[in-house]
Length: 384
Ligand SMILES: Nc1ncnc2c1ncn2[C@@H]1O[C@H](COP(=O)(O)OP(=O)(O)OP(=O)(O)O)[C@@H](O)[C@H]1O
Ligand SMILES: CC(=O)N[C@H]1[C@@H]2OC[C@@H](O2)[C@@H](O)[C@@H]1O[C@H](C)C(=O)O
Image (cartoon, rainbow, N blue to C red):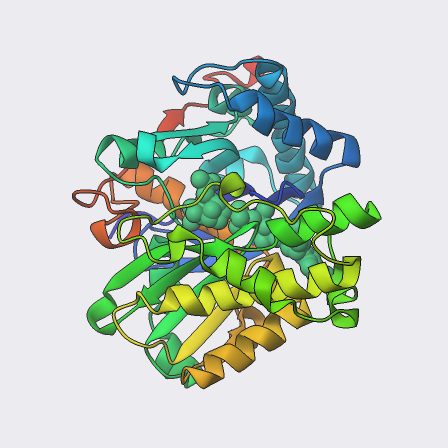
């Protein structure tokens, strides 16, 4: 067992809604003590710049390229993360010297697993200078070098959370963690801690794109719009007949893999209702590829706050013999789980422990990953 370290995790996910920050104390193995967490929303102008960044990234062939305005965006994204860390430390009466490491995800702007190309913008060296804390970043790349799809990486953290959950909370195994972010992903924890994980389909991104295009709002808060609509079966079929659901090898998705609804496809309400159903149905459809039927679904990520998605997921899972819980029902935090995971993975990276496994990303053998950016040697070199 290694020393228990204090780690902060930073996640800017595919929804591009803001930065999640969480602190944990961990040995990178079986000890995890969850601490405070918070979120910092991006302003609409910065969200727009991130969306533009996805377009700029389309021409990238080598992962270090930064076409268009990506270099400027990377710098500003990193500075926003540095501000988030400073504010988080201040709000929790912590000093940078109280923190051993920051796990920095950055922002995925391109993900083409079939071409072994994944690009997360975010300058780890700059973040270490700005915060005065060691930073582990770029945690997806080494997995791809070894034949993995670079995602999902959160399963290693789900596995440690699952330990003891069945006894403590009296829930049935096998357990599946469902993360409904911009894209959704699943982690199955079987007997003997066997882990099987993959992306499961569109999460909130299609819903967000739809309500933004039609109503100029970033997301369907509380599923209010969807709850006024009707499911359009032909559109559901269109999404669920996507080759992803039958592909044998594909494990991870890019935000652009599922095309948004066309403006004329549906009314605002019916479109939101249909896409909420697609989100839930995609999760259950993808569960068919797991080693056995899940008895318990533990849902985290912003999608669990959409009651329409949760109702559909509950009904579909029940038909398949499973029960659905929001993370909070099991004393977990569905908002901060990804940020906690990045803190955990940073400590694993420092210890040389695997971040991914053949059953999670398809990597040939369990591999570690991440790059370390050391904090400045002298306090004079960084701005507090
Ligand atoms: N109150 C709410 N009601 C309905 N939907 C919500 C609510 N709050 C958040 N969401 C949805 O959750 C999304 C954010 O989820 P989350 O922060 O888990 O995504 P992410 O971390 O960016 O994604 P990923 O896991 O794909 O990286 C929002 O874009 C929105 O669609
Ligand atoms: C390339 C990339 O950023 N993928 C994200 C995205 O968002 C959800 C899903 O697609 C998942 O595969 C991954 O994030 C989570 C946190 C992961 O790596 O586990």
